[in-house]
Amino acid sequence: MARSDRLLRLLQALRSLPSPVTADRLAEETEVSVRTIYRDIDSLRAAGATIEGATGFGYRLVEDMALPPLMFSRIEIEALALGLEEVKQVGDPELASAAEAVFSKITAILPERLQLHAVHAVNGIYRPSAPPAPSFDMATLRSACWQEDALAIRYTDEKGRTTEREIWPLSIVYLDKSLILIAKCCSRNAFRRFRVDRIGEVRPTGRSFRPHRVALLREFVAEAQAERRHSPGTEAN
Image (cartoon, rainbow, N blue to C red; front, side, top):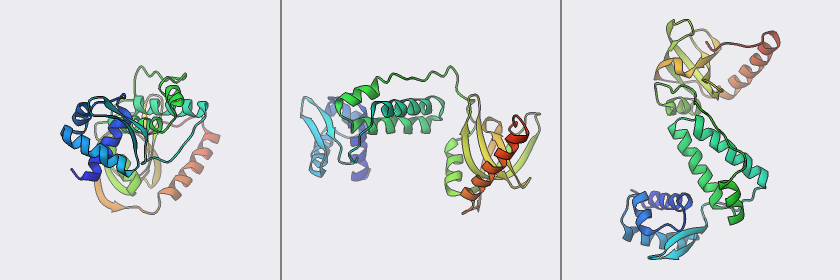
């Protein structure tokens, strides 16, 4: 592992683990030796991180040189905690892990009083059931949206009919009971809302539709607004 990656992992462990955290626990979390932890703690301190503690007592990250000074009001902290908890409950494992990491980074730079507000937020989320899990890695869809790469999918509609389609993925939308992929369907030359749990297979095509995603999203929003004015709802198809 590169030294820079190792130091970033150590910083993240110091942010997320209950403090004070021992060198043994840090070594276990970052998969290095205790001796390496001692050296890397010194390196982080030299780079500007304020880390309290010493050998045998454990360590606590006080000021993180990797994050800029930042302050939130109490209601802003509540909003952040609520939103990130929602992502952890309804997102796929990669997205849920990212939400946990974001929460750790934010709380690490707050004063201790505000850290307590974040950890013990008044508002909460309870989801007895998440949307049906897809049969493929959601990272594939996210990457295709980011990179504006066309995908080939096998899709089964609400009537049980299965079709092969080439799509331009635009956005992933989380509804209460389902996950929807907004895409331009090349086969139909039209926008479609695909239920992600009905997508049976996803394959990259190697073709790009860059730089059309933002313009297509604007077009979709305009079309959806016109659609709502004429009908109460639209089934994913």
